[in-house]
Length: 581
Image 1 (cartoon, helix red, strand yellow):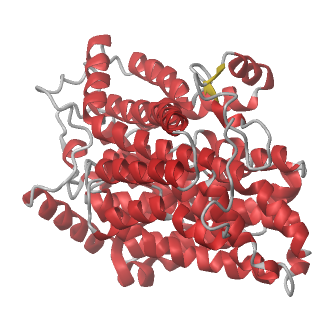
Image 2 (cartoon, rainbow, N blue to C red):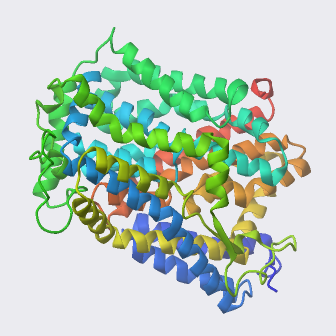
Image 3 (cartoon, rainbow, N blue to C red):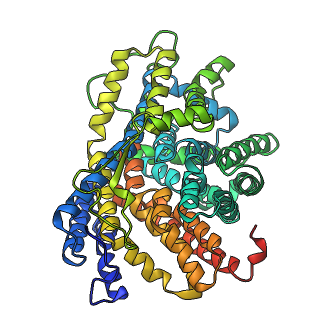
């Protein structure tokens, strides 16, 4: 049986860490420096990870390759299954002609694209993160912003940055519950600590979004509504995580922030909305003229079927091209059509609420999961502590997966919108074809993560960072950031490092709950640069192969927010200890 040695290189933890980080350096250099396509960067980094595992860590080559195969399988299902079904659901709204009504419905709240970005990417995206997670918010809100006229790169970066503050409590607080199960610290206690950290991120994210959409002018003209949104979301997160329900925190915060924005806009309206819309329109047209604009709703074959009778806007092509008719968002529509426009997302919220919050149904779905030891790998790998690795047991959540729930939602949506089964099937097939390179990218990135985890590379890096003593309080969020950047999941980052954070805290005389929470909070700002999430965003807006461009645009915001969290956690470990629960 293989058991990783944490210091395989010259018996030095520092040197071993430098070797262990080579796959990550390869990935980030190829993406951010050489601008290589994500699937090639992923394959190259995977090769480096396997080489390090075999030559430096002494992992048998067959176990390294089997680790990669399990990771690839996990990347395809359930991760990419969620993305496929999320984009397919969006396609159904386009072929039915209802997406144009949704665009106009958001115009009833505000015709200002900067405010619409806050509503869709932050509030609505936070709600989707609360219910689904695993990339679904980025996929859905990305194509929605494209339909509202955002240029592809701007739409992608906006949703990546927006998908931060809700992540810790995403998928009904799965990351926090996972940390609690591993450390035996009550997850409600961890959630309360996180609720004293991520609201800081939430407060500033809407300001970042309006800056991304319209630069300094956007901040100058819309800062009141951005601050209201961020403040209400943060306060609601704090109150819910501390006093109400950790599981429902993001649902409560997202709905509270959305209500606050709607109410605030009844007494205050930003200036410059038309100028911002015109600039977005020009940017989208320029990218189309350059041949680089995304077309997320194009089926990739033939002509799109006509909208069913009785549905409006069947011939509208704005959602498919990413251009926005200048007057379209200002046109008023009737109540029934507004309800029909929002119906897909109401159905999604209803389905996920039933599946995640109704305990008997939740248990029934979970019982359908198929679990089995990965052939040739299970029972052959130990953790660094000498225990059998649980990672080698693969779970196939064929019914409980968010992707399957989205598929079921899509079937209902197609029936209500009167999209024929043949048309729905054509859209599903076209989505699979379009995502072929994204499937490869995510499979290779998760294969990389599994090789690094099972060979011991990831834990070597974490153990070395944890050796900083009391200064580890400052570095603690970095581990969560790193884990989420590698795996694309805050839950996985906690699975990797939560116990390590607890052990390091006890050795350094720090509060273990604080550092476990810091691991979770650090992960929320690492998700925007995860190759998995970058690929999802790029795919949603039609920029497949240009993930490196999104990485370079997002990395500065990720590092800035990470630094803020590091400072906050360090201060909470001493001078600001009074602000903890």
